Length: 237
Image (tube, rainbow, N blue to C red; front, side):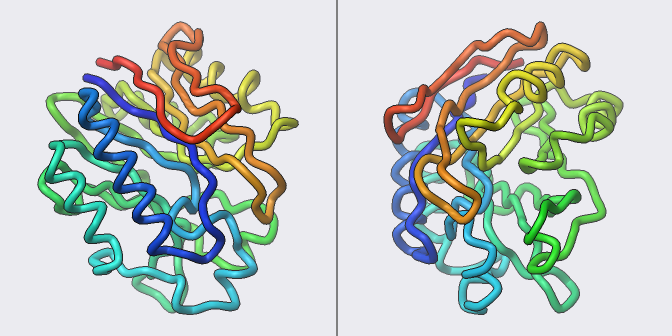
């Protein structure tokens, strides 16, 4: 199976613009054979926790019509998209949520970030369940940025027969996760690790890109670099 790891600079607070970008990347990656397309943390709104806190309209529903262009793109190319944004929970708050939109446009899975970092804990509700989905006989696990600092998530993924671990993150140039987290999770647990990351300025700093993937031996098998938006493809199994 081919998986696409993406990177772009979200427009802060502009869901419609970000959805257009996401839908375009799904169509482009799907045209090159990707069956799953992974995006960064809060790619739907930009990584802007304070803006989200102060702007209730930025919180989405699982069936939010603003995501229709992504659903249409998934159906058009037969690919699933892992998109992340502030999504209402069953309680009064919102999670930092990955929605997995399937190749038919339906919701395959939802994952709410379990480990919140810094200001996130003042804005969002933590999740309590692991995220899983299967496609074409391949089983996937979901994790979001700071979650990846906790190896037990990857350990549970292996116990649940997952072979691919999808990380939606916001990482800057000084973040050591590229060397000390993602390749280590891959090597220690025999997983493919696929990273969707951000480019450009955001509330956390400046995203550096380098979206891509590591193989089960911990070696890089795909790297989108730091220069511009787009995606890179990796074969997983």
